[in-house]
Image (cartoon, rainbow, N blue to C red; front, side, top):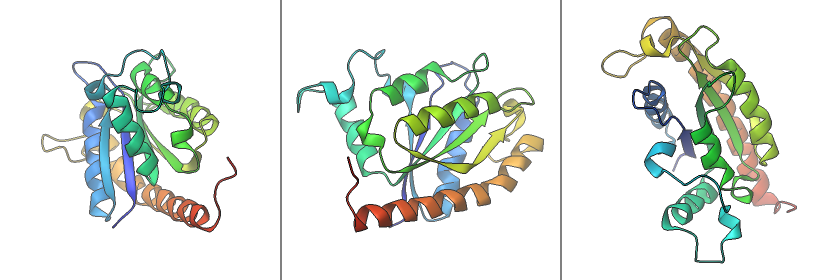
Length: 196
């Protein structure tokens, strides 16, 4: 069985463009032999953070939260697909991630950003780097940034135009980087239990 990779996407907008990027990433990782699953924050629709998963008595968390916690704990690695909202992160994706903490620990994470403009969500990607590190993940150095997201995919959902071409070019190294850290983290967890 290949690496278990969870791909998180956070836009709640009705005309979301980045979902095509997230869906393509699922297919691209699967083509490399990984078991990739898309987690769409809008589809899960967690409430605004009141209690973290860990703050519920055992067995009393809402079913959606319980199911997602189990998936996160079972994953080998994470990919966060983020648009840029006013130079910052998407609130839907941030809200979803903040429901958990220890569940994220000791696994690698990678960031894919996008936007309609030429900066390709890079400022949101930079913000996510610090957030994910604080949440106990090892953030890999390779990133992907897709500009002109509205034109980066054709009708079949395949990369197109300049943005899509840059994505297709960058993905192999990005995926190799994540796979290396995924293997390293898994081997270390098997060799020695995390310190906390």
